Each structure stands twice: as structure tokens, then as C-alpha cells.
Image 1 (spheres, rainbow, N blue to C red):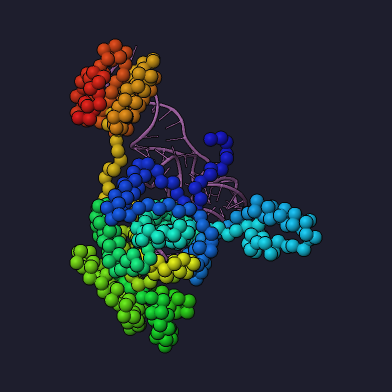
Image 2 (image 1 turned 30 degrees about the vertical axis):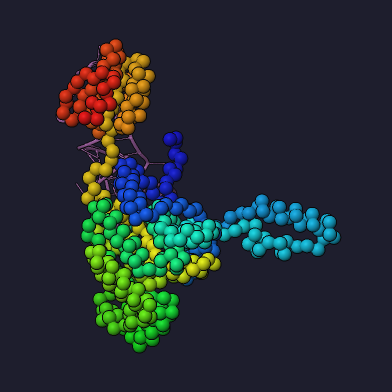
Length: 459
RNA sequence: GUGGGAAUAGCUCAACUGGCAGAGCACCGGACUGUGGCUCCGACGGUUGCGGGUUCGAUUCCCGUUUCCCACCCCA
């Protein structure tokens, strides 16, 4: 730290997650892995950046995410271009010089760059990997992914430009049963199990079916027609929505608009027979397994790929960003990315928001040291290191001081670290090969022979 | 992207109408040279987010800017 160098800070919308808060994050991720494991999900890790086209085609060009929130850049492809140029030179020299690079490579490669994007969500990347590695050959895939996502939105509480999602997907060829309502119900019930294990109460599950693309087209049409005569009486937001995205009218919270919205057509009236039965069966299973939900036929989800089942878990005390997780079915996504038919359903938990709901109720998930070793006097660091190594190999959590500390300072450090025991390693102890072990909670101190240290500390 | 509020020590916050920038906690040292928490004493800690303007004088008023918070939008 020198003079008046301006401090470099975390950039807008990003943040450091520091201890002890990181312990809560570990706790959440541990529980997630444990629960997912019991439903036979396996972890997948995909790259944090992908080709821009993946999200444009997968998530949808017209969504807010793709149209204005992605971190996208042109990535130089120099080596590729150099090889191409020398290749062209070579060919021209041999054959008399008619060849142009335009015939060799696609336009974006000719320009020497390719468009890349930091992933704004997880599903597109997972489906890309599913297609790329022919994962459908394995039958149904139950996958989960934990990691950061990036969206260039204006930050506020519970909304960051780098945020973390815990994502899970069930995807496979239709013959594997991936289309079954049983999968929808299983995934939702799994979430409830996870929330229970995390001790999160007061959540609310909203459920809807957004039908298949045909249903939605008809619904959109009907909605437009129904809005035409009444939209003039609605709030300015709704007037705008009626033009840009009529579905969003249902998000309106203006009291005066509610009677009008109540009378608008609902997606539920436009579901075709298979979609309707599918949705009924999802509800049926959820009811049987005792998962409480509310049908909300006003809930519309913002990503283009959703079909049929859509759901959202909300939690009070999160402010305006009250959705802790959301998900749904995406039966046509694989095809739209050039892959085989691969119906799927998945969800993404906003880990930042989940941790927020936990922070209040959570006491102490930090693992405190079992013992603090206090070397006392010259040459004792080495002796202490040896003992620490033995105890740690015995799976104990050991913190270690320094031989230059006065004993008082070692005690203070041990207390601050929250250690259960302090172990003094001084000349007297080394000579006797027995060490002073004091329980910092009870104040009881005993002398313990070297070989009994681990078992005494464990008590 | 739009609108509103805020920013002072590591943390939580004071500072009247424009007049020497402070407290509690934390941290470090001492009282106490091999025994912590309690107590007492002391020290450290700041370009008042940043840049400009008004003024004899700005943490305070004005303009700009950055970041956070709240709401919109949207979503996890």
C-alpha cells in the first residue's frame, strides 16, 4: 500500500464472498450435492464461456437476456487466420493465384474473430454438451451444475452481474421417459427435499403450464385481441407490454389494472389435450407426495425455450427479487440447437438469494479448530509442526501458532480462533514427552502423553 | 437502460446554521517474562468515495462522476 494509488475495487455488480460467509455457501453446496446424489444426479461442468450463437439460438434472440444483458466479445482467431493466409499463398503460388480466402472459411473466421459470451444461464451449455457428446446414447441423463453466471443488469439487492446458480436437468431421448410428467414431479419434489434439508421455511411454489409452442401462439393471438379494446385504460407499463410482449401484462401489480387482467384469456384455456393431461399428472403426483403448490396461470417465464411445466419458488424477505429458483420443461431446445429430440426439465437456484434467506436463521456452520497448538520458546516450531502433522492426519482440525508468541498471546489467538483445546509445546513438555492440554471451554488442564493426544482431543 | 436515497477509521455510526473530524466495537501494546475470556491504561487508525465549483473557511452548499441501496424493467 503506497502513496495515493487509487484502490482497485471489485467491478460493478461483482463482489467478494468472504469467510465466515463462505461456510454458508459450502453448507448449501454440500447439501445440494447430497440431495442430488440421492436422486441419482451426477455433476457436469461446462465452460464459463461459449459461442454467442448458442445462447442466441437457445435462450432466444428476443429475450432480455440475449438482447441486452450478455457479456459478449469478439475473440481473436489469429493463428487460424495466419495458417489460412499462408495456405492461400502456397496454393496460389503452385496453381497460379486465383484462390481467395472467401472460399476457404466462414465470414466470422475471415474477420479473424469469433463471437464469445460469458454464460448467462446453465441450460443451454448443458444441452450443447448433451448434443456434442451424444449423451442421449446413455438414456436419460440426470445432471447438475454449480457455478457462476453473468448478466449485465443494473445491480441491486439479490441481483449481481456475476451470480451463482445451482442447476439441475433431466434430459434424454423420448424413449428414455424424459418427457414423462413423473420427471417433472420428481425434480420439483427434489427441490422441496433440498429446501427442507437446508432448513428453509416459508417458501411458496407457483406452478403453471405454458403449453407447447402452438398453444402459445394461439394464446398470444387471443391475448392481443382481448387487449386491444381495453389497453387504453391500463397503466403505461401495460400499454407498452401489450405491444412488445403481451404475456408480460400478467406481471402487472397496479391495482387498478387487476380487474381488466382478471378477464383476459389464460394459457390454461389454450392447452391442447396432451399438454393438459401432462400438467394434470404433474399435479397429481405432487399432491400424492405431499408437495404443496399453487396454480398460477398468470406466471410466464422469460426464456423462449420453456414448454409445458413452468414453476417458481419464491421467498418473502428477499425484496423485489423474491424468486429463489425457477425452472421448467424445454422439450424443443435440443432440436433448435441442431440436436436430436431430447425433452428435458430443469431448474436453477439463485444461490446468492438462497444464502441470503439462510443468513438470518443460520447460527454457526463454521468448523472450528479442535485444537490450537502453541509452541513456546526457541526451537519449538519444529516440534509443534510434527505434532500438528500427526493430529491432522488423524482428521483433526488443528491451528498452529508461533514459538515467538508469548503464552498469553497464544491463548488469545486460540480463543479467537474458537479452538476447543490449546496444546502447549514447550521445553518441559518435550522433555517429558507429555504435553499440557487445556480445554478452553471448561478450563480443565491435563498432561497428555504424545500417543494419547489425538484421542484426548477428540473427547 | 429510467427514477429516488446514500457514501465519514477495519465495522456500526456521530459531528447543531458552513468554523480544530469524533465515539463505541475491533486491532496492536502494557498492567501480567509458562496460562485466554473480565477489568484498567495506552497507542494505532482518515486526502470525509473521486473530481471540480462557491467561500476567509466545505464532511456540511452547488455541479459532475463512481459505487452501493430502493423501485421500475427483467430474472436466479
